[in-house]
Image (cartoon, rainbow, N blue to C red; front, side, top):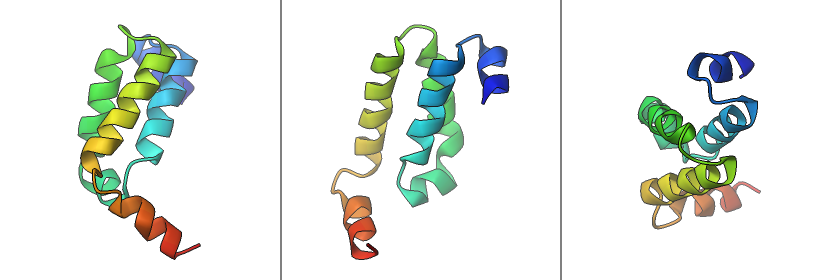
Length: 78
């Protein structure tokens, strides 16, 4: 994680937001779209505060799981 922040010059806090955003993606998105999501978040990381980046990650998650099927699936396994 620190390595990621050093490469992009975004800092540790923003790197953590990116990692956390990817972890919160629906499982199918983590398998098929993780590179695209990481790239998008990293691209905006220098222009946004960590809080703004966190909101963007949440919006991306919503776009990939608008019907909430992922949350419903998680609830079934609890």
